[in-house]
Image (cartoon, rainbow, N blue to C red; front, side, top):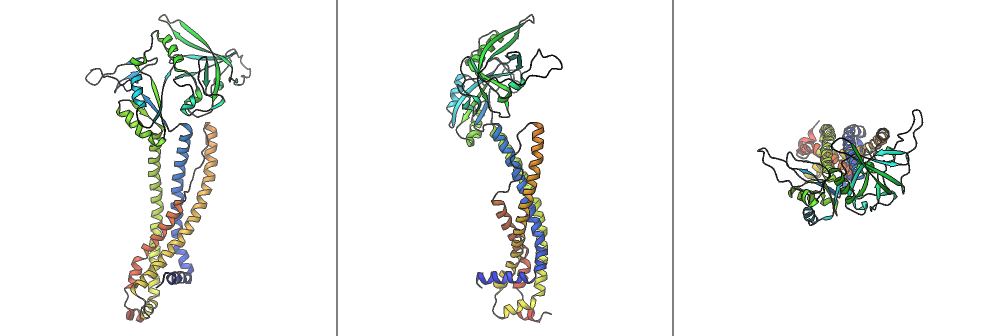
Length: 444
């Protein structure tokens, strides 16, 4: 029997029993639609989470910190505290000295290694009559663009006598002389303005000592949703001098090491491998890629669970297909005997009934894909409206997608539903193919 003849017979037989085929295919529609909607929901949640992670952090960056064993601690200004193991013996810490930085630069895939440090004493930024607290970060690069930062105003370059500030810094300013009942002044525009950075420390008697630096704001960073929004950036040497002033001692990074080093790789796919090599050297290494991998694994499990729920619904529909085909064979027993009497082989009969069962699965799969896609789009619209409202209340960025249907999912659902239909009709088709023609013709 030719394939074209087989298709003509299959769809001809299905069209003779439209109501029965439609009722049987509804179960397949429900199961296929459940797979499309639930898996699309899992993929959409994963895509939304990863997109927000891409927006928050550069996936080519690795934060490297010194390792001090189980009980080690680290204080600012290059001062380290040696840790001890369970026996009380001191452990030799792994410090980020200049020689260690040279080893990091030799790792394949590493593009740049940038030390950074914090100013660990209270500080205030003043402009005219307004002031606000700040987080000071010193970094050993002449351009913050090396760390993936972009400027909203001005430039990202660092130089002596200037600073680059986060976009939220002006919003932290207030007027300490403001009288009660008066309206607070709007956040100042600090770009290209001369501001005073006031650093504070206390002597042994508890007396406060202040040091004031006059700096120009060379640039304002774009909003990132992370630490840069609330920080000001200075050259590392400037922050080292401030920490030396607070501690009263000189800092030698060759002995105490840096507080933190940022390693930038040339490809995000290499970040995890480079981080593992850095960890093997005895340092602590954290990268956004590790969080991304954990998120992907979690959502992969969720997609498998969601897909399993839809598959269960499709398997229930398979029982209906098997029942429909069994009843069809009983009704068409004499027809089967006549087909065999005029020369149809067992293979022809088997192919015909398997084709009818697969046809029911195919029709249900097409309907399920249409229903599932439309339902997914409706859920996506409702979810985006709700999540956008939540994001506006919490001050975060709105999600870009809540339900996402990739191209491969409808194709997989259609093939899976067709295959389920074919397998459901396998036993009835075998019964039809093995019928004895004489007995089939006698069947009443």
